[in-house]
Image 1 (spheres, one colour):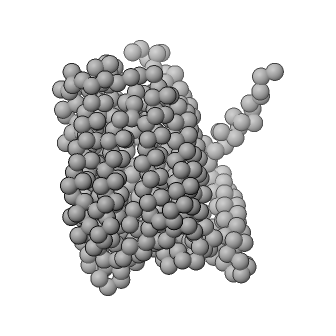
Image 2: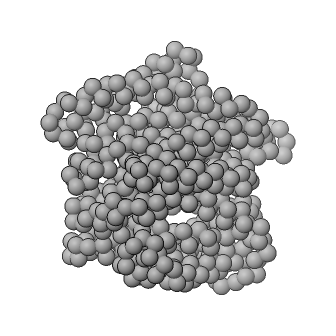
Image 3: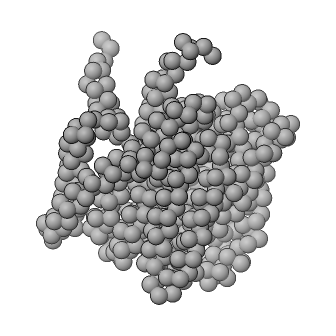
Length: 497
C-alpha cells in the first residue's frame, strides 16, 4: 500500500471506532436498562435465596462452557478472508462444544449440589443444561457484525431478544413466585436470540469439518485466556457460595452486579471495539500506542466517576431499587464499585493484548488475579465473611492493574507512568465530586430524593471540574476532547431538506 493510500486510514478508523463504540454502548445500556427494570421487579417478587440458587447453577454452566471453548469466533475475526467452509466448520465445532457442555453439566450436577450444600442445584442444572445447546445453534454468520464493526445489526438482535425474554420472565415470576421463573427466563431468552440470529443474517450454516485445520491453533490460547478471565470474574462468588447461605449468595451476587455496573455497561461495550481496532494497527507501533493511550484516557474519564459515584450512593441505591431486604449488601457493593475502576483497566489491557495477538499474556494476567483472590479470599472469608472476600478482590486488583499496565507499556514501547497518567485527572475530579456527594447524604429522609440529588450534583461537579482542569492544562487528547468533538459535530449537523 502506498503512502497516499494509507493516509486516510487514521481519520476513517477513528470515526468507525467512535461510531461503533457508540452503537456498542447504546446496545449495552438499552439491554441493561431493560434488565435493570426487570431485576427491580423480580427482586420484589422473589427472594435473595431464589437469586442465589440460580447464581450457583449458572456458575457451573458457565465454568464448563469456558473449558470447552475452542475460540472459533475469534478465529473468524482474525481471518481476513474466511471462506464459507470456515463458517460452516466454526458452526459445527461450536455445536459440538454445546453438546459436550450440556453433557458435562448433567454429569457434574450432583457434585455441584454437594459443594454448594444445596440439593436443589442438581435438578436446576439438569434443566439449564439445555441452554448451551441452544446457544451453540446461534447463526455463526452474525460474527460478521463484529468483524466488520457493524454493531447496529447486533443492537437490533439483542435488544429484541431481551425485550421478549424479560416479558416471559416477569410473567413466569408473577405466576410461579420462585426461582424457576429465572430459569425459564434464561432458556426462553436464549431461544429467542437463536431464532433472531437467523432472521437478521442470511447465512445458513451446515454441518461440516472441511476447514477444521485452520481452527487448531486457537483452542489452547482461547482456553487459557477464557478460563482465566472467567475464574477471575466468578471466583469470589464460588467462595461466597461455599462459605455463605443461598440468601448470602443472592445478596452478594446482586451487590456485585450493581457495584460493577459501570464496567459491564460502559467498559465492556467499548472494549468490544478495541480488539479489531488494535488488530488493524499491529504493524504501526506509534499509531497503536497513541490510540491505546487515548482510549485509556477516555475510559478513565467515564469509568472513574461512575465507579466512585456508585460506591457513594450504594446505600440509597439498594434501598430504592431493590428494597430494604437487600441493604445488607451495601458495604460489599461499595468495595466492588472501587474495584471496578481497576477491573475496567485490566480488561481494557486484556482486550488490547488479544487484539495484538497475545492472548496468552492476557491469560497470565487473569491467572495472577485468580491466585491473589484465592489466597486472600480463603484467608479473610473465615474471619470477615463476604466483606473479606470482596476486600481480597480489591487488594488483588491493585496488584494486577499495576502489573498489567507495566506489561502493555512494555509492548507499546512506553512507560508505566504514561498509562497511569490517564487516571490522574479523572481521579482528582472524582475526589471533588466525592466531597459534594458525601455532604449531601443527609439532604432528606427519603432515600429516593437523596439518590436523585446526589447523582445530579455528583455528575455536575465532576463534569465542571473535568473541563476546567482540561482547559487549564492545554486541552490534551482524552475523554473531554472526544465529548467536545462529538458536540461540535452534532451542532454542525443539519437535517436534509
